[in-house]
Image (cartoon, rainbow, N blue to C red; front, side, top):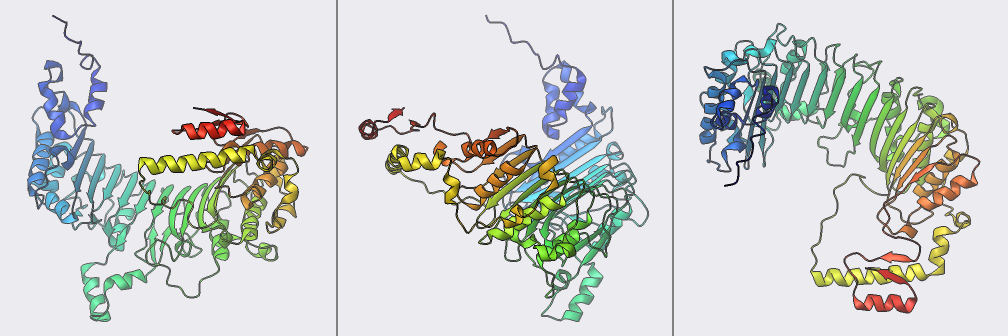
Length: 579
């Protein structure tokens, strides 16, 4: 008889096994006791409990009460087990529904419920609490997490509080979250007063994460608001016109604010912030002169929405400043920035032309990394001006990444995929391959790919005077790495001209990466870069292009298609085809 396989898993040390158990749902972790004597009671030494309705199969009762009973049965068993040897440090609860949030709310309100789990002695020193409520057809539910000392005894020991899909309950007046280091609210709802109370109660908070946070009014204020507005209005309409202010502890160093559009702006008073990630309207930028600018901000990742885009509740101000004025007034105040990622729908919006530079432009003397993404619509000159603005204002710049698209959002969803029959795919592939073969044979195509004098045929409408009219200190002494990404339309397009300018003028450049779409080798520009660099007096650089599909100039690889007709055509043209 063959020998039984050795139990290598049980031979691992307890610390490793406990780490494995910390990722299992509570019910599954308890059942590991049946594996062997080595595993008996081991799960009671784990300091993490995971509760997930998905671990009870795909069966969905219509109101969620069945899964709620199963979920909290295992939860109470895990936290009250007699043999538990260590307190619970991490508690994760995930409730998901393929329908609406009412299902998640029914699960959370099932007896004994979340209150009984948090009141157990084993969870009184809880350090990490994660509660995620998700539904396919709605975002938020009416379940409210109580955060008072009586209903949340672990408040004083919590270091991490992550909530998604629920409401934030009233907070105590006195400081309760004395150890809280990170607060994360995703698709949650809260009144401004409740959230401010939590921030006031967390003197050591370092990270604040707000994603799609919806603000509500207190019940009494809501009734008064409805009486004032009458039957035609609501507190929600009033909230959309309010600009709120949140005061953060001085300990907050990292802030993420994503798509919080239920108000007319959310200002932050956070003087100690060094990291900022923001997605929303430029008009709603969270730091203003009124709220106070963080003096030590070093890392910023900004994505600005357009009023006619996917972001809801556009700015209500009818006398707003021009976009370039708002941008440089806000972002220009962060003089200690070292890292900047910026995404715009239209790069031209932030361009400052020479006659206005003295009024709006601000210096970023310490900025070393810049990533700029956006479209330039029909104004190529404006895009060139915006790039020149950054090169001028960032004398210490070491790495630049540019991603362009002629129209629309550079990160928009791809077009709908059309499913074709195998016969149609073969026909289209054959037509494309024969066209490429003709182009490879054409002397004109060869000249366009590798001719040295193709720059003499440049389009006259590409105006780079903003870049060519001055010198930039970063190009002369600092810039070492450039990355460009765009879809190549022709060899004289705006992006190619930008690449040519940078590769010729960046004196200490070491690496140039160009990703110009999915073309054959003769349709890429990376071989031109070497010619342009050699034409300048600067040193050689490493040039990185797309992974090309062609082996050499006249060697052509056909992918998934090599019919006899194609081989015959290639033979007539004197071109060798590899299958």
